[in-house]
Length: 75
Image (cartoon, rainbow, N blue to C red; front, side, top):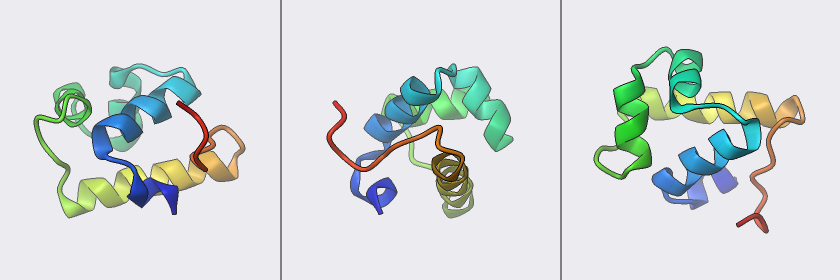
């Protein structure tokens, strides 16, 4: 799946861009802090396995709802 094939900072930015949400909004959706999302997006840290699973799950949910398209050809 494309979720695993992109580097995390690009993926986080793309997800937020397509959904039209802020880092704060994404953090709220995932139940994590804004600072954590900010560090992911700036490549300063990587998520734990649990946090990555939550992020991937959120992306899949948004894809199923037709709000997100991560199937390449978008930059």
